Length: 342
Ligand code: PEP
Ligand code: MN
Image (tube, rainbow, N blue to C red):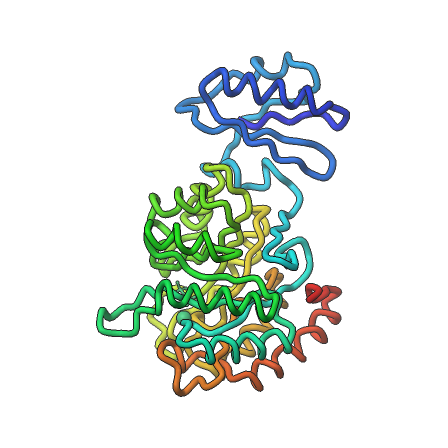
């Protein structure tokens, strides 16, 4: 159920609705919008009676939510959400195009700082880099863990860039949330519901990557887990899905961008690095993502891609990243869009 307050309703009237919802043993989720506030209700096992709310002062309408997700849908919040991240309050969503970049994994202080300086100079608004890496092989480099987090702190202190890094399980969630400006939940954990609930309570914005065989509805339901815990700062990320095609590592599903935009108010980024697995295909797909209406990119950049300990074949060298970053504003202008401010 969604309780829509009328445009002139007072804060006290909205508060009274929230109190009533709590007294019913349910959870209110006020979502202030441009022209109105809507209050979502979660926790009810069955339908609620709209009359219980429609008789209250300031309430325009109480409407049942028709979709299985309640908080991530446009029904509750028609205007786009904007998520602000990091010391400079980098903007994700709401029209501007924002680029997050950095290496797949943090390998050393020197590597991380070189990557961070390069992506900052080229115009990235946030730095990405994994301290905890979910690897297909148990014998592959698993990330530096806490040492990696210490390096990420230094990167932020030196460059001022906000940090995006992945949590893979409950112990790493706690450590990552203490350091990161945005917590990444990777494709392999998109349906790890206990981890999603922890992300909902972690106190940081969340970057939620699409599972490699997840439908749009499964992605939105995963985001719903995070919002249902009271964390509304969620950004989705398309990173390619598994198909029969073997000319790329995954098949980047750019059609999900307009599909998400129709159904949800959450921002969506595109990751052309994991989406293609091949360096030379990153730029064309990055440009296509902008044209498709994405809110930004997540791009892997390594100071020496051929020596990378993970995902080297899909990582851009700083020069190639700079070339991509120089093309994006021109395409954005042609589309009537703007790059996010640094
Ligand atoms: C990553 O961003 O480095 C990563 C592991 O991505 P994904 O979860 O999409 O595979
Ligand atoms: Mn990677």
